Image (spheres, rainbow, N blue to C red):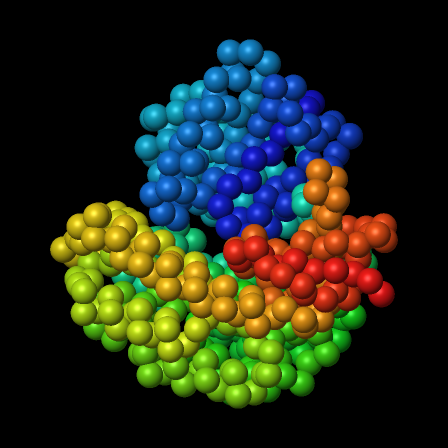
Length: 428
């Protein structure tokens, strides 16, 4: 049976998809990349914000059209399936099986019944890396206890629960053994890791650092949970990068309180200044929400001043998505035109900051992980420690006469920049 997979949403969902694909490493199945040639398709969906839900719906409908041609089975899993299970059963009769997140422990039984086949493994036992074998995510927990007033994740994924430290170290070693050089630690909130199992992110990183990865990168760190102990562990590590992905969401205390974010602007500034005082080459990435209920020109100006003062290395922003069943759903909503105007103004300021930082990097040398070759431009594309693998932070274009391979680490010298991306040469 030829089966295809479509993974939507975030890196955490990608890890789930890789474990779902691992279920099908079985002679009964053949993995097929072309949907038109598939007997079955599994869509792992996202249901986080409105745009993600629209993408999930459109993908389901698009694949459902194949049911009239070659497709025999259509399976839908993931956050959208969990959040809108009853609605999905009514609205998508073409789908043969919807699987909720809390059914993953028995998904092999559910699929086995659908395919009339006994699976030789269960979910979470086998993982198939789908992008490359040199960079992978290590998901260390699921769910969230922060309960931000705009966020549906706790409704979808439940309360925060950490994965076993022993199991995570074992899985990290397995990734290292298959050639992974860059380990990216993820969860909805990595800094909360261990609170429910009597350990901490700092303790986990010490153990992961003993494995000889080239790079270990930590994503999704909440500012109020970035302890001095954690910073010391990162500073004294051999492999953990001084890369701090800290979702902040806003730069005004009134709005932060309405968002139910822990901490305040003063705490955020103190933590970021602490990081920069400890790490000479720290990279700080953040996300902001524009157009949140009760936002006005004064609160937005505070946020602009906040961004100008802290000069983030990388900043992503999005306009507020009103999500049913969240506390903020019933707040007075901001005019869409105002939200879009503020978004453009914010990103214009961040663009100037990013360009200035790129200008300052000209002449400097960085270690770069090669990811692909673009024959049309006769150049390689890679990332330094300053960029995560999710495509948000920009890339480095490398000119060289040498033949490089994907997964190689090379030294390059920056000679120019193009918007958010850098241009470099490799002459050594």
